[in-house]
Image 1 (tube, rainbow, N blue to C red):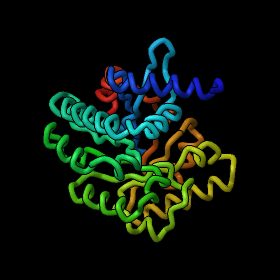
Image 2: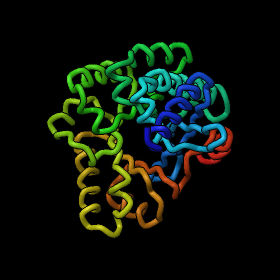
Image 3: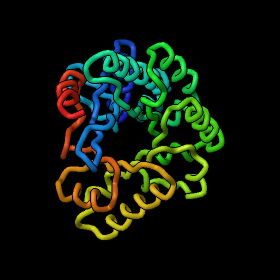
Length: 262
């Protein structure tokens, strides 16, 4: 085995232990209403501090969880953790907050995502409209008929549906019409140069217009500068998230921000 194979195997073993030992945590990144600057929702993001190594990027460990068949139980844990947190906020001074959770295509195809969500919502007493499921454009196009049926069942329950990384995948507009979608998220790749690259600016404006013509809300992710915010406001974008406002935060830090800005 070469060094890369050994490192991969080491990481796989560490992830199996992480699942057994519950080493994961959830951080939350605020979404902000462009019109008034208020926090309107949150995105839940999975985090892993590998013992003796430190934080590992989700871009590294999530695909490995998928390949090991572990994303279904971990994804279920995330949804459970998020709904328990929404219920806790609902009982306190903060009140209920809408939270979006990233869902892997594997959870839709291999797991029983709908039954898991229905059970968790019932157990925590959280109304379905406080939960939003985010899928990437690419995962929507895998096993399409099954995915459409699953999302229709979720939508009928009252759970919101969002397409993440929109504009980078290969979905056709015909399919877009068939999915029961509430939100389009413009990929960070377009936002990064939206004020300097005319093509990115044109694509971003087109996505916003397309979404609004379909009665969908639009979220821009990766907003880092006032110039980007000004462009998005002028273009009619509904919500933003990014380091300009806040990085993903652990619950204790987030609580102070929510009490100030909700």
